[in-house]
Length: 533
Image 1: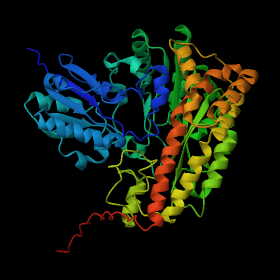
Image 2: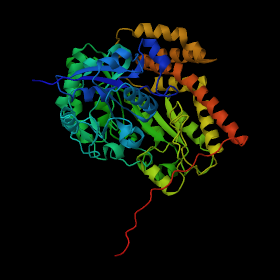
Image 3: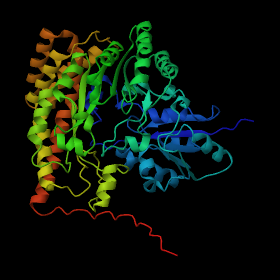
Image 4: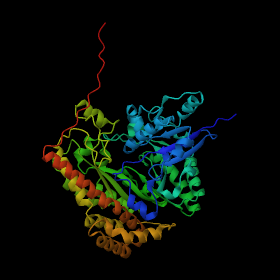
């Protein structure tokens, strides 16, 4: 006799005030959220085939009482910006008497926050879901299941349940080739959660995932969600020719994006292979143009090359760069705004995620700040934002007001329409796309919607957009789909930057008026001292 169980998977809401939600850009295409919940649909594939699974993404659809009534068990969890809603879901389940399982990076980093859940699945799920399922079948209704950090064999990861997704709700779907990153940046929790030895899936696994997406009729943007796609270059070099061959055979149904370290620019052959496979965008963590800061934060890979030349090299390969920058490092000697703005302009990167430094729960930075009695007890996550508004959860080495003023200046400057579309125009000239963008259903409709809505992003935006568009059409028409894509993001980024600046203005005003009080500091853990016998 086969057992049965009805599993309700709930993907929590991301905090509304987030850089990443791209709400207006989603509306252009008819999508409801940028990315699909890859983690949950991967866990769904680890469950017994006799169990029924229903997925509700709170970012795209309503969660109903009927969903709860149907379920025997609820599974939820996610990242730090989803914490508030994940805790709400857990409370809702407990109030209805539904067993709830929580997993994902945030509960792994901060399990005590999620103590109300019946079950916690900590770390990577592939090798411990068997234990959880066995415990559930034997009658257990609470427990903690923990995998060793960064040790899971990802070749055992199953084909995600892409069939559970409503594809038209998303700007893109994700797949994963590797986990982990070889670098040891002080502020990053990737190495703490997934290790410094990148582990890769087999080529056959990834091809099965692409085949599954293709068979479901999906076409367009696929994001490789790897922490650092080039972390294991040897494996990637072996994989890319097969990816190119698959794309050739299917007449290039997908365009790929990913995240990688800046040393990608050093490897011309690898860049060419990525471009030939139809990668069109890469997110790079630049963090700071200041060498002292990069050395202190252990991001030395960014100091061994010229940033401007590196970015130009990647653009020249036909792949455009989105970048991350951070304000608030201890090593900042004075105002960092002018240097950061200059770096962003010189590299012609339109989309820059500029955030305030945030000490994530499991990082070298957090351990250092705790040892120095500088970490706040309140981590700022009760706010409805991300590191753009909820950063600096510690005593800064520079005056807090100066850090906030720098941050405000950078955001205000780089997302002013003339500056933003100036960078898009220069990108449009540099981006040497070898392959024309494949038009998919809805592309033209989205373009015309953009034309009608671009003026809503703020005064002066429409004029700058049209100047940029004409320039690209005259000088590099193959880049047109990508400058249009980047322009669409401004519908969110322009107003979002102004909203964040207003919030920072209010925080600075509180500081000036003496109304801001630093939260209590977190106490250092008590060290056990062995007494001599």
